[in-house]
Length: 92
Image 1 (cartoon, rainbow, N blue to C red):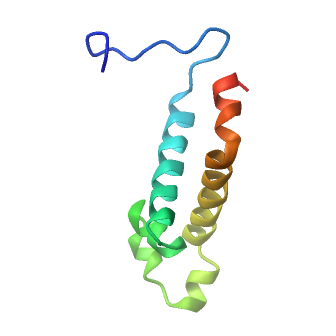
Image 2 (cartoon, one colour; image 1 turned 45 degrees about the vertical axis):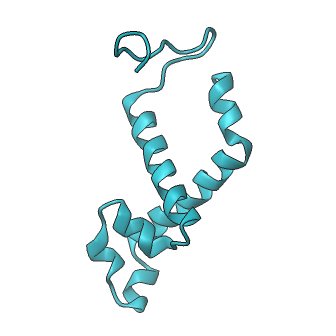
């Protein structure tokens, strides 16, 4: 990192991200990367460490928590990439 290995402070007028917000943003970026590589919700679940649920039969996968989480992450990731990141930069 520039500046001797320390993270840069948040821009003036913005609050630093909490640990939970940072982890969610990392998950969003991973989900978007899988999506951009042509993957779907099952691939996202596998990439995020929920491979056991991703291998469920179609009937069980349809109602699984992993599928719902993958779809939510993908929806939010696309929104973030399509301009939602501006709210982060503005401190909202």
